[in-house]
Length: 162
Image (cartoon, rainbow, N blue to C red; front, top):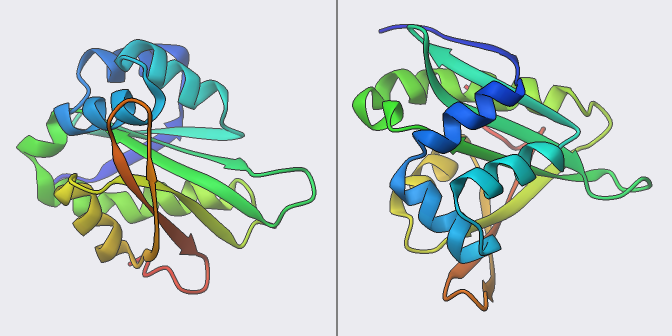
């Protein structure tokens, strides 16, 4: 097992991610936002209050980001997008990803609950989020781009950040 190291994401990390984005993440981005990888990754990073790159053995595994929902809110949005390296070393990613999410969440210490939408048919992401302790809500969202998404939340006190 190789450890994943994290640092603040740089524009070059976003470009690297977009060039090697997992197919499932690219599909989710297209069906949610209507963007291809380059535009979607750039928008995700730009809209984030904090964004971190996770590397394993020098290879980019993922970017994790968070943003506050509003100036007055104690809620935020969390996201993670991965490269094909995750599929090649899934155990390394599973062991390291809680630290990446914790680091991203800690960038907004007064935010208690983070949420987002996940493509219903993206089974690997849904299982990963469940493993992290995400709560799934009954509401769904159908986008004009043909996707069906379900809402999830990860709270500091309820998230199983192993």
